Image 1 (cartoon, rainbow, N blue to C red):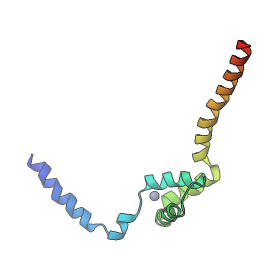
Image 2 (image 1 turned 180 degrees about the horizontal axis):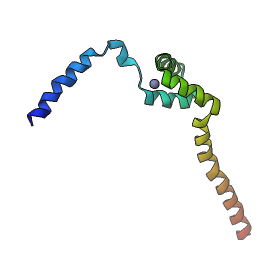
Image 3 (image 1 turned 90 degrees about the vertical axis):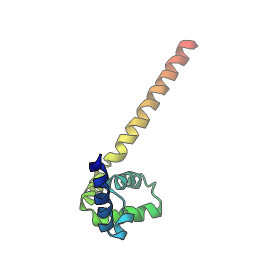
Image 4 (image 1 turned 180 degrees about the vertical axis):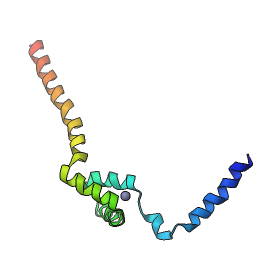
Length: 101
Ligand SMILES: [Zn+2]
């Protein structure tokens, strides 16, 4: 029980070591969400600025984003998921029409 209370001051002192300007920087997960929106051109100018800020200081995400822009893998996944059911629905509707007439 005393061990739990002992870890709290350590975490608190770690927070103090973080520079204040790093607190506004997004993490890689949020950056990837913005990248997917950026490829879809759904980004607001503020989000684009935030993403660029992260890419400027995160080589990993920069490489990921350049790769994603080239291959468009991020949106491809979305399009396949949306289009496939629509085609199915259309052919089912046609089949139903033929049968009911
Ligand atoms: Zn990153």
